[in-house]
Length: 375
Image (cartoon, rainbow, N blue to C red):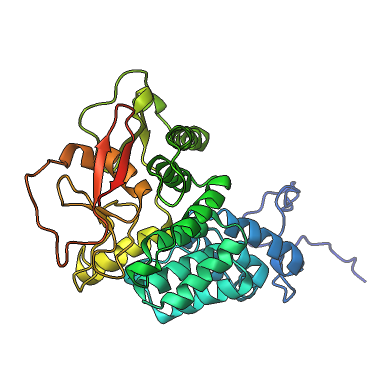
């Protein structure tokens, strides 16, 4: 029997005799590809209460509607939790800032849903829209009153303007004492326009016993609060508007407003509330600068309130061109632009029956201009 002969198996391919083939070792730093599993993702493992708390914080700090809308478009679960009443009640005024040209029934229902959830900003915004734009006076006033009861300062001031002008009714529906009381409450809560309006009322004896010194004190407080708000907001390049020199003679339209011209400070104009911006855009889209039927808009660009009847607002008796819903709007617009534009005329004719509330601009050396009702 022949002895068996051992033979070597030759493998095809690159082969080097006398060497062992290397094994391909996967480094420990490289993790293998994950297997596709049908289990829940990380978001589904977060409790609903924690997600709602996060959404409340996001809604209260949103600087535009897109910040909140993007959450609704993320996934079905976030959309459902974002509609939680607790989240809707915490939405900021900028998160529900509806554009006038995008107004629709869906926008109306969304604001109504926020109102039902207890959002004070939604109560005020929808109340302003219904009262001035949709001409649903009673329902709009009730929504603003709902916010005012909960100490919402802009709603208190808006109701004060309605009482001063008798908006939605006749000239005999004016209630000056109620307007002053609402202004005082809003001013106590820190509303600068209400504080300025209250100061002018005290100076003029309008709805309250005249007290010039006390009125001047309130006007100085309004200017100081305006400056404090700007300083705390962290606006860049403060040296461009804060100086000890005298303010420029020609104001920068739409960008700066010398609210503290007494002290040589050019403070940027206050930011317009989204509800007031909606009013201005609403009438601009639907009829230019006139709400129709011979009615006029408040000449202060940051207001947007229209007349609810003819000759409701007071007109400047010097030039006869501008008209204002309140003394606070007149004071802001005077320092913003009208101080340079107002030119006295010898005589101008009032529309209709001569108007019900012409005013005279009485410029004084302190930079605050008093609205004096003409007899």
